[in-house]
Image 1 (cartoon, one colour):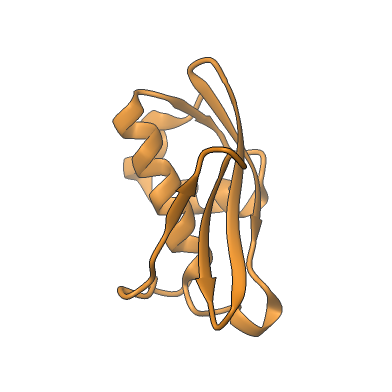
Image 2 (cartoon, helix red, strand yellow; image 1 turned 60 degrees about the vertical axis):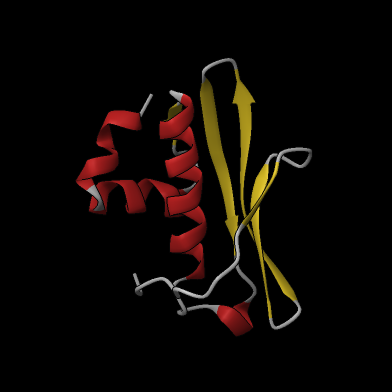
Length: 96
């Protein structure tokens, strides 16, 4: 996984249950479904033209930071989120 960009603006779109970043006019997302105190991180999407720039990692980190701040547990059903959490042991306490 690439180091996430530092100048990326990430927005938490609560109405759509996802974290978003628009880069070069293209929307990148990390989507979740919330049920009580559990969020299911079910999709991470970055257009091919933007892959390899660390955008997905930044979106997932923002989502996990939010979950931690809210006291939520995370089910990483998205394979990218699952691998991210495996590679970042500090996130293991969030897994639910």
